[in-house]
Image 1 (tube, rainbow, N blue to C red):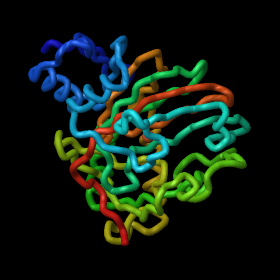
Image 2: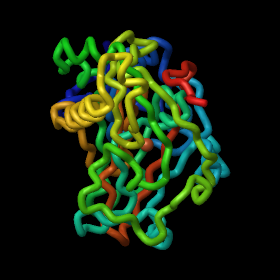
Image 3: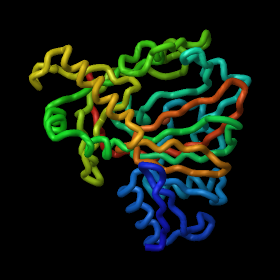
Length: 306
Ligand SMILES: [Fe+2]
């Protein structure tokens, strides 16, 4: 093993011991992939990266995917998805949480989950660090599964959960809506963001990771809607709602979380089939830019409902 691995807080690891600007041979590529599969969340620091290097490095982990939102990709590098907080445009991403105004705050989710075919992974690179806040949180749902009691694990083997795409946070059933108010310019329907109307999707509550074989608790609070046919698992409708509430609470346990405070040039690679993520957002008037490359998923983990 040539790579150096240092645990992050609770979940994920910092990986060093290589230089992205020197040739990465097949053995080192295999090591990087193994570490990714083992730990799910990898932080790389102090690498001298530009967009071309980020794309080339990302390809070690699989074929890259273009995001359905064309407006936010780069013309020069179509593989780059740009997450940009521009104080001039932030009104569309502004909302109020318990009296505090936040820009670009996002609940726990997995990317492209609403399509039934989430991408395998992604790399975020910090390009403009927010002067304050702007953290990205990662949660290891394989660890969350491991920590469930045996009875719950067995019950969940019989359950599918539905995710309902929505642009309006107030319509999401399991996010914390206490003190939440959408901003006056918040998008109201998918077409406001040039999104299509995504149909609902159903996932097994426990997904077996197609590569590592680990069991993953497929519960991310954003857009989580309901249990499919609860009576088939011996649950009443009310019990099904309580179960999802309990599982969402379980995933909020900080033991499964790592919140990253970005520094210039930091890169994080995560396994989107295993880890969910969120952002704390910033106060208004703060610039922030992150470049994302997206590693394609070649397996549908969920099914689209008609
Ligand atoms: Fe995301």
